[in-house]
Length: 355
Image (cartoon, rainbow, N blue to C red):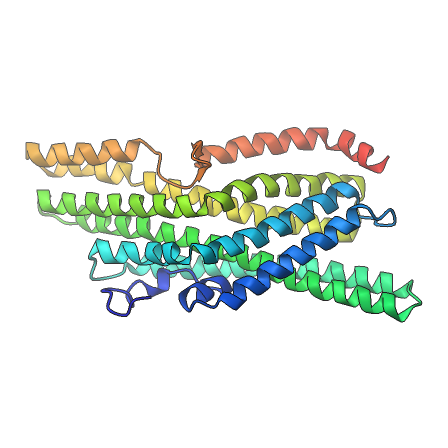
């Protein structure tokens, strides 16, 4: 990051953190190459397992994990390939916004959500780690040759490192979503400051906020363009993976399978929530901006407020799925409908898996 940029320290708390984020800031190519390579190797191991008749996971599950790991490895390499664009996006808002103070609620919001994310990701990692340890112990108990034992330990090591890479990729995307959310929280704070003011609203004040909102939209669109491959693959793969884990739990309700199902559904819900919340934050300020119209008698200011309201009312701000539709709170209803449909069909699908 450029040291001569204004307000860099002010907004440093908002910028993404984690292994991949620090690798971007300090251009640690080895981190991206290592994690990408490990994820590809893990994907190949899952691919080999598809053709292993003794494998108890089932070909569909192995195929899903293979695609997920290889896709994740590709996305990690893409992040490094586009590192300069990511860093530009992470510096654009504070450079263009020209804000002298960071709203205190942003720091609290980020701290709370990062803590929740850490807890959920840690529990999901623990679930995967624990089930892999149990699986390794069971397999080693049946092995007699030293070469087979070493091979299983090697696979276990690769799988755990690949799991770390997968969750690092997940955390980077969630941190990126939180960074976008911080824009709109900052805009909302400026609106609230203006709302509690007893003096009449002036044209420069409303234009300043509208300009800040437009900068937030502009940077959201830039990050959305960079993150489009991740959003598309994760949205589809995780939707399939989490629901398949649910069906597999119905078919084979063991502790091992239940833990994996809970981990899948938890991480999927966490990521979808943060994607949806961007659009929610961008549109919930409508009523607050509308209240400005009662605090002015100027026709020019009223027109400026109306233009601001018209932009907010479009409700097309946020991350998109291949630029086809914006991921909004309405998507949660659609996902709930899909989940309900799959849940109703789960007994039939579970019996098919058992057979």
